[in-house]
Image 1 (cartoon, helix red, strand yellow):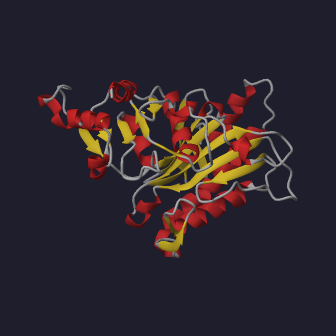
Image 2 (cartoon, helix red, strand yellow; image 1 turned 135 degrees about the vertical axis):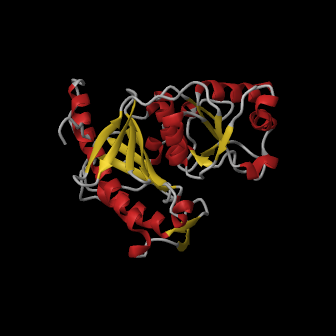
Image 3 (cartoon, one colour; image 1 turned 90 degrees about the horizontal axis):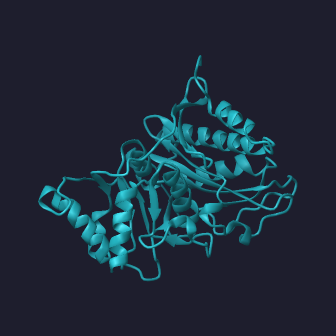
Length: 334
């Protein structure tokens, strides 16, 4: 551990520069870390403990749940509901907000989380993760739905934990983005990726091509230009990636650049997008912008959207700033 900065040390050192800091926020993050370490352990054991496969149930979005969706959701709730730092929680897997049990004190923060992003990949042993967002609340009282419906610009902190070949946490508190790798031998997250930044330009894009026939003209134009490579107006070749795990897509963009798109499509007019504003788009937008990138619906900055409900969906275009600006420009041109 010599000369290695742990996440706990990193947070405490940041806290010292804030005269009004009480340590409550650091404790909250510590409890989130504890939950993610437990999730990492269970994900890594997989079928050895019978954790893989379908739970034969659906979540509030009507999606078939994996066993690990339910297990990880329970882990997050159990790790956070007693701590005294929260006024309430919300999960992608739960229909309503999750109240703090009456026997525990109420804190000044709210946590929203996707306990296992990319869970459709879990049975084929591909990367999954946990996404979380922290907001301020009215201290000492039970949170109500309206307390959660804050713009992304109001986030105190956002992060995600990646369960892959190594377990990593990527975190922002509004002062840049840093990455921490879990040292399994000592049980600590160690600072390994300081001040992560996204290059403004890229030669890589990620999108689900199977939906191409449903895209708007702006996205059709952008992807066509990328595929044309050196023979097209971009005059350079692009690589295409698609993992179907947002945590993996964003981590790749943070480490080597790129653009990720889950745009609006015409399949279901009742759904203006596929990704959840509160659990996926907002926390990832906060991280991406803090790393020098951009995040948009194609027409509007993600973090400027005033939420209308806990499970609101939005289109998402994020990554290299110049590429996102190009895609937005194509949308505005009609």
